[in-house]
Length: 311
Image (cartoon, rainbow, N blue to C red):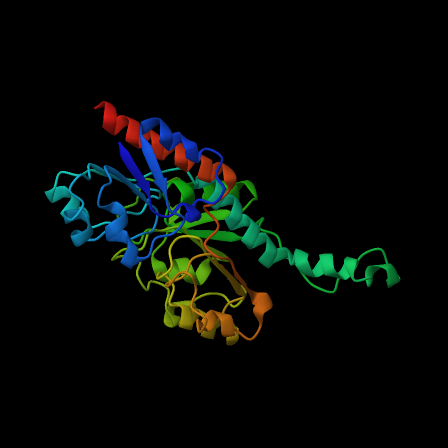
């Protein structure tokens, strides 16, 4: 088998990339531009792509292509209709990043709540050594315990986040964007009440017709002015200009965002212009990417290839 991995840089220095080599000759490309794609896939039997777009023309002009593996859960970068017409399976990987995303979600939340970087700097810059008392109360911080913790998107990741929130002592509630997710052990609320009463809102939903532009300025106005908003789901669920405005106007207490409408983030993104940057944490779509998560992802890609070849 001639195997081509189009964007290994998205995986980083994962220790088990070599798993692919048991199936045949593997060509690794760190990145692939749209202009390079057609030439690089023309002799491939198996293609692996994380985010490289494979459109109808690409799929039609790769005569030996037998399998497309997506090194992710989302498959929106693949023209699945074109692949189906040629009988080419498109196999993705699921449930590899649950623990990683949940952990980073709470890392972001705890930074917003506890402001550890401020206290760390207070000690390291010598101010604590000059104090006349044993502690420092220059910044307030708050507990998760007793707060209403709202989750949008109760899939594998959302349920893990919900269980951790409950372990912290929060009251977990959820909003179902599709209106079909009813079999959960938590209180389901409609969106207005969900936003109005939650102290923390954590988004773990896919981007689809139910969630696109879900969080607007008018809906942010419903939230408590102390509420915190987290998004480790997908960019495009929150209108970024509206969130920046809401933070600047003090409509919410703060936000932590790991995903953006355009990735990498554009230099003119309004979130980069928020006046009080201590109320906003921005990370470069890393919640999924623990070493364990990326290693498991490679195992799942190899398992998909093995299953395809042995069927």
